[in-house]
Length: 170
Image 1 (cartoon, one colour):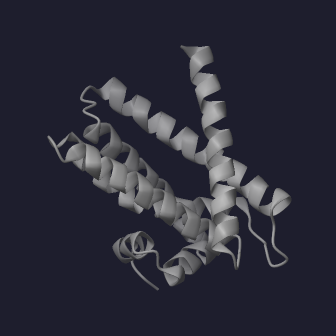
Image 2 (tube, rainbow, N blue to C red):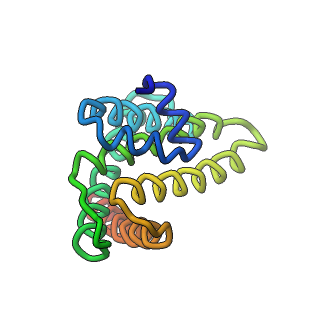
């Protein structure tokens, strides 16, 4: 069994073994949440959020957005686009996608002049790829294309709902 840091590196390196280990370890829920919190803080710092209110706001949106995407992905992946071998629960999706956010800690470099923007763009793409691998492993898919379709569909619905909510609140 890998330690926390090794799991984060394994997830960032797209290790199937790491995702399978995290999926099976129900004690890793707290670690997954911690990673999403760290990723949210890194994103806030990288985006130059400096006051406590902004930091908390970004963290709340990060956590709520992640949970929404997890729920949508679970529904789409197990009900709308399952394979014959698909079996997953909320915890398995929560853990694998939480660890897939490990690379998001690099978003802290978004505040660097000149190279910050390209770093954020590269990290965003990398995070999508890690999310697809996490979903492929959690849903026991043999097809990466199916995992990609589930992730993209969930992402689109997630952003429509999130945008609609923030437009209503603001």
